[in-house]
Length: 186
Image (cartoon, rainbow, N blue to C red; front, side):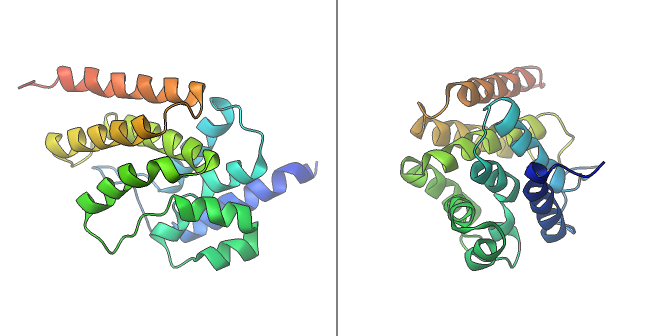
């Protein structure tokens, strides 16, 4: 049976993202392919966010491709259109600046994000929190806590964007705090 035409752009985006991230892994003792993260974020956008806008779904699949590869906004425009490219660009951190500065800029720039980018940012932060506090990462507890606090600060800047995604984010934060509370020395 042929693939329904409506699904083709999503599979094209997944294949494109998988190719761009093919050598990247999530950090940890048993690194996961990076594409898993993109699938989790886009799944949350669809299942929790009940998103039907194809540009937002495509951007959720591609949200790290400019940041983590040689792909440019122009490249994304050619493949997926200007709207998708512009949403991804909004979510792209400047990897030439120090980690702490990038995280501070996420907080400062969050209120200027489009609604589409805000939805993806919330899903991305929730997904990252769940991974950070589930998988055996070789991050210090301090780095995990700093990521959690930064994520809360970012999402606090854009609350009121999407209730269901924010509830999922809050549940993710609560999960992380429960994990932390079970850690010795806490």
